[in-house]
Each structure stands twice: as C-alpha cells, then as structure tokens.
Amino acid sequence: MKKWLLIVLASLSLAAVADDEALDCNNIRNTLETNRCAAIELEAAEDVLTHYLETSVEHNAADPELVEAIQVAQKQWHAYSEAHCGAVYTQWRDGTIRGVMGITCLTRLTKQRTYDIWQDFLTYMDSTPPVLPEPPVE
Image 1 (cartoon, rainbow, N blue to C red):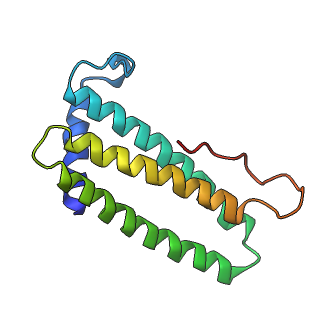
Image 2: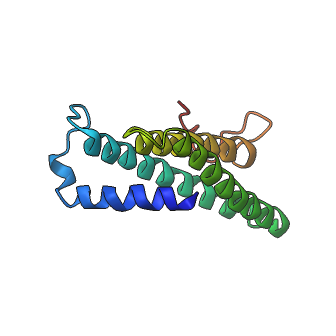
C-alpha cells in the first residue's frame, strides 16, 4: 500500500519542477495541479504534526515512559494512516482522482492526529493555557 503514495508523490515531484510559484491552487486547471495542490496541503499538515509531536515529547520529557508511549503510538498511527489511505487510493484506482483521494485522506488523518496530540498531551485539565494553540481540524 505504501507503494501508491510513493508513486503519487514521485509523479508530483516532477510536476513541482515546473515551479510551485506559478501554481495557483485557487485556479486549478488539471489533474496534475489538483494533485500538487493537495500534496502541498499535506506537506503543510505534516509540518504542523511534526511540530506538535516534537513539542509533546519535549513537554513530557520528565516522563520517559510517556515519551516512549507517544512515539510508539505515532509509529502505529503512521502505519494505520498509510494502510487506511492506501485502501482509499485502491477504491479509486481506476480513475485519475485516485491520487487526490489518497492525499486528501492523509491530510485529513494528519490534521486529526495533530488535534489528538494537542488534546491529549499539550493541554491541562484545569484552566491553564495549552502549551500550543488548538490546531484546526477540518
């Protein structure tokens, strides 16, 4: 299943060579642009997830058992998201929409994972402000 994502992202990197600055994601003209814009959104969501994950590890550094549990959960979440979105890609395998469907699935799950990390490891049960702001979930 991981193969599908590598294939999609490899093809998108060829499109990226055409210059992302000229890409207008508010005025998409073809499937390649649709996929590239979706990939850009996924990359941004992954960057936010990485920041929240790293911050949760730093914030909980005094509890090595918790840090290890967070890291194990992240690895397992990654395997789940790849498998689940691989299934979405497979569902749409006969159409040009397959790439954007798989990427959009990964983006949605990544944003939800970021929120879950924030809620479970970066907030407090009392009125203490959270360590980081609440991430948006769409």
